[in-house]
Image 1 (cartoon, rainbow, N blue to C red):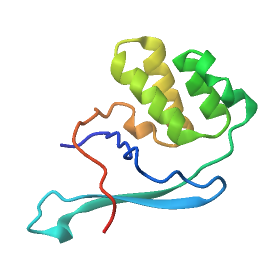
Image 2 (cartoon, helix red, strand yellow; image 1 turned 180 degrees about the vertical axis):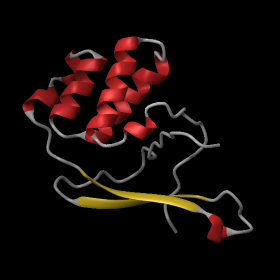
Image 3 (spheres, rainbow, N blue to C red; image 1 turned 30 degrees about the vertical axis):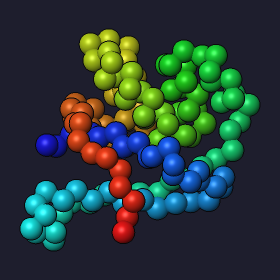
Length: 126
């Protein structure tokens, strides 16, 4: 089923090193008999050392956390945190507006109306 998916790494996964860039690939095998028909996306992520304003995030509202992440260029966490809010409050106009705005900021505005899918478990590459 098409849609946006949230993948959570296992708690046993080794933490990323601060300042190092990592490449990731997600492969979707729609037909195990035809692996060549799989679809994949890839990207990079880099863990950064938290700035003082982010260390106070536990004392802020969920929307303020989203804004802190975005203001500091921590896009994966900003998108993930806002996606959690959006899924819990799909009719809240301020959340919908923030979702659309954040997607526009990272050139993903075409995904603003895409539904979320429940589907996957992260598996390490082989």
